[in-house]
Length: 235
Ligand SMILES: Nc1ncnc2c1ncn2[C@@H]1O[C@H](COP(=O)(O)OP(=O)(O)OP(=O)(O)O)[C@@H](O)[C@H]1O
Ligand SMILES: [Mg+2]
Image (cartoon, rainbow, N blue to C red; front, side, top):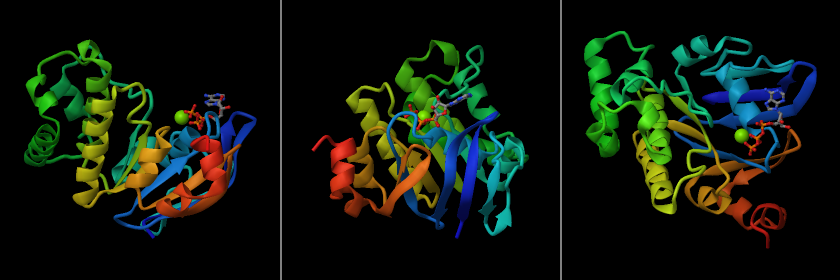
């Protein structure tokens, strides 16, 4: 297993959100985590990424414990986290923001290769390499955040709601780029509100409700599960 999350309890201060959350991801898999607003999806990704210290449980990456490691250490192990908030440097250019994503990559030549890879994936970013990130449109900023997440050549990418607030056409672009990433061998854990589309494209999924994993299985099975259909698809 590439990632093993074992019975994680986590939250904010004394407020516990996640309750015995367990999940596994194999190398090369495309896995989703879906659930209602406030279920704890982002909290789960933040805990894996090392931004929240779990109260209990264990996280293994490539067989080694990473539980409680700070975010920068987790990133160096090969886990890239693209947050909902994106945290772009608004007063820096697109290209400067991308290079910030490669801080774990020492080799300048390798950094340039990554930059070309990202520009190839998102020609829009290449066109706007000199523009300040803060003046990019919402969709373009999303693209930039994903592009920055790819700059470190991660083994595992945790992507939180990449399509949120995007027009349908840009949503397609985002899903297409995740597909390209996946085909290049990157393991992806995707959190998404667009459950129908997400269950179409991913291999497996977990359903999180009130901080607990309620269901897990192949995405195609989840898509036809009566509970999933009732809760997420309104049928
Ligand atoms: N920094 C924080 N301090 C206190 N509570 C928080 C904090 N961040 C999130 N929470 C709470 O934790 C719970 C889970 O939040 P989380 O962001 O993980 O949900 P989510 O499943 O990602 O929801 P959404 O689909 O709306 O993004 C929510 O009740 C939220 O209010
Ligand atoms: Mg969230």
